[in-house]
Image (cartoon, rainbow, N blue to C red; front, side, top):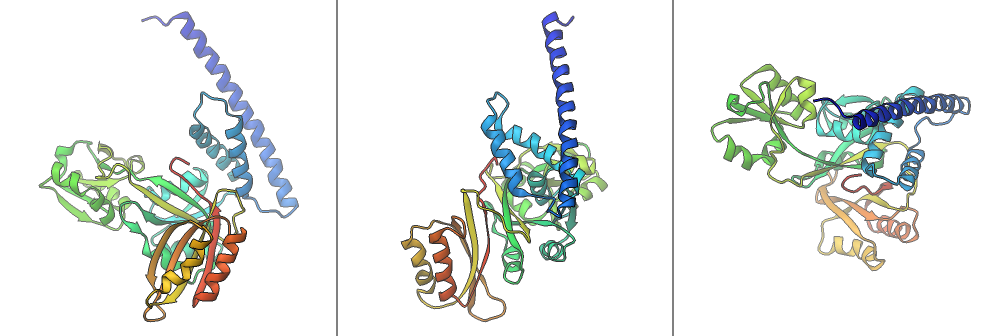
Length: 361
């Protein structure tokens, strides 16, 4: 069918706009290079999260639509990421391997152009940042399906690193294999958490298929790439990386499955006006001890959005508590509460104040 004249005119208009956008992006890139040179001359930090946040806020305020706000932020996240890589690439360590959900969270926060360094365990991520080989690290802290990630909580006891940001990622698991056909599958591999999160679907849809636990969703994808009868439960990002096809999308039992990740580093995050503060402290196990230490926070009206306990490995019958409270550490009530916690506990550390994230951000 012959294209209408009106459609041709509209497409021609889009082509011209695309040309203008490309030219403007390159003009912006030239200014970025000048900024990078100025930072070098003045010995300034290349990565400025506060400046990045200001850009997003300004874009949100000037966007009159119809282009969606979150889509606009995603577009500029990649522009900013690529621009920053022109100045100086940022090294980001993450719990790997590539194509895991932690990798996806790192990309969501830093953009595609970061230099991502996969580490096989959470201590390895902390070590990369502590030794200065990575500027930042990304680690999981909790999920709606499985609760807290104890290895991350334990690392904060001795680590000098700060929490700089948090990332919320919707975890959607897909069934991946070579052919994209469910009938070809004889075994399903994945991380134990992913298998548990998809347990009901597997039982109902693939009752005779063997489930095999492996160390990561990415390892499962590699196994599926090597064997036509094996499928992996992983994120869709693993399909393109390992040459797989999606046999079934979104097979997790809970459709509202989110994982929260933390960005860790050596720099303190600045106040945004929508912050939370994370603290860990230790107390001896005795009746009413936790109530007594948290009562002053309640009296000041401070909201605790999370509380988690872990045994203190260096002392028997003492426990470390990890709490998130709404507010910035220098806010008057928060500062006084932190001072009170310090006096009443055998060990206390402020892990950082950072902007609260929400679903979709």
